[in-house]
Image (cartoon, rainbow, N blue to C red; front, side):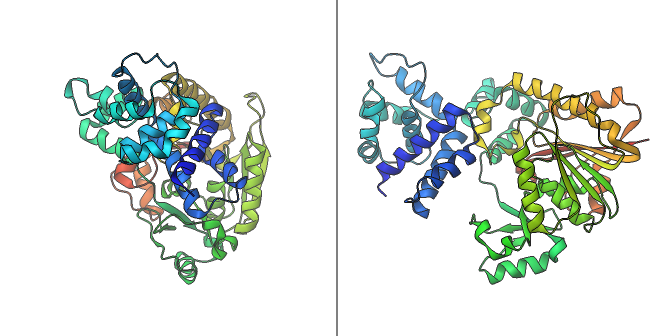
Length: 443
């Protein structure tokens, strides 16, 4: 397919994402399902460009605004046309030749932009430099350059300093590894690796998780025979480690309070040797239906599902030996997988989530039996949703106390130095997505 047509498809997908504020991966999947004529290379181009524009949305917007300011007699645009952001990406991130780009994008430009013309805009854009480092205003420039929320960068600068904040921002915009978890209910890690090898996939060992493997490149995993057999699940190594903090054993009763599609429930079932009981709860019935389907493929028989409501007064499930509250969060730690989440991530949104997270802990704390374990986890990297929520919970629940995450990890075969009482996985250090977890026990 011609590049001009592919760019048109990118604009169309981005319009769906930006107008509906739906997760980009869901929009892209639906878009491809409705367009069977797209080949694999076409799909790769469209998907990569779509995610890249979302990943660098703030920077591209800033560069477009500055370019427009440099053009005379151009009316102010209350919102930027999507084609303008895509054009800015092609110049800024893809280093496309301006003349070549003009021929590819010109027809699309004329259909949605009156002023300026694409040629003068491209010339103005090429003259604008990417914001550089300025120690006098480091927060603002770092936030724009990496398209990160201001409040996130401000906290990271306070906690980690300039150099590490830059590294963390860069890792949050990078391409994540393709990590899987070997399903030990159907064989060991090496058996899974050998099965993948027979299908031409040279999976390498995980960096941290004893049951983790890493694919050398992104592939259609669901098309593999080993996947259909249930030999592995797609799961980031950091997510695998969260399950291990519960140290579940065969015969236990476990509550996964915010189970979603059930990746951690399936992992815990494998850790329990498929003996005991796992109760998976979630607000979203479709996600739990996905868990049921995944359980069949994985050979998990001990997981039951139940749809819950937001009603905090509903009776908790219990008593359970272990309770996991993997709370809804701002997703800062998963920006590299879901860059569209950046567009929703405001300080007000984070504050509202923190209140919801505290309510979830209050709701499910009674489900933990005496001597049982409670793990609170998120995939975000801001204190107000992590350490502050846990601190508030402990101050109002004196029957709970912290266990040291760093003491638990070696017992589970996890190789993750540098941890303390809390688990905090930072993408630039661990190569995983960003995660936080607190492990508590009830006296």
